[in-house]
Image (cartoon, rainbow, N blue to C red; front, side, top):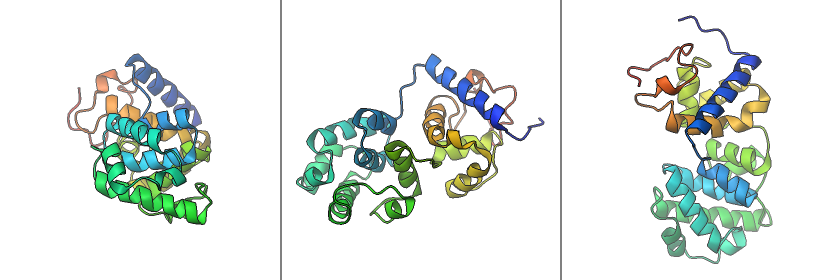
Length: 225
């Protein structure tokens, strides 16, 4: 199948089609996006993103809600013990490690930044346990700063649809910056995470539900539904 290089009009269509498909499936927002809207605070976005690593979305959201009911800023968080945080965020993946990281991050924010979250990728990456995905999602949803956050869904769908040809999420982030219109950098992660969970799944994607079924090159897809 011939696949043309994506341009701005192409991405306009993709974003409309994918959102319409998700709406028809009554797909809710990803957990961190929900936290960003309801809390409107970079600290809560940062902590919720840390909780989301290696954890299902519904578990992340419930853990975030429980934790933020007790503490939603660094000063309040530091009044909790690691055991108290563990109990609040269980059963997120690696919850004991995450509880310690949350305390370490909160301590740095309190000591170095007056309890505020820094708004540069360099400063965020210097925080304990914060990688590029967490940093970029915090910039996106916490500050509204343009950055492309690439997780497994973004990496996989971008390659599957032929937008890019990369081996790692880190490489995908850099290449996507060259092909994706900047106004879509922030909503890209939210859209493709939801789409990857519901339609363009890693194994046996539900291509029959996708409006791009006839045009998508389906790179790497062995079996679809």
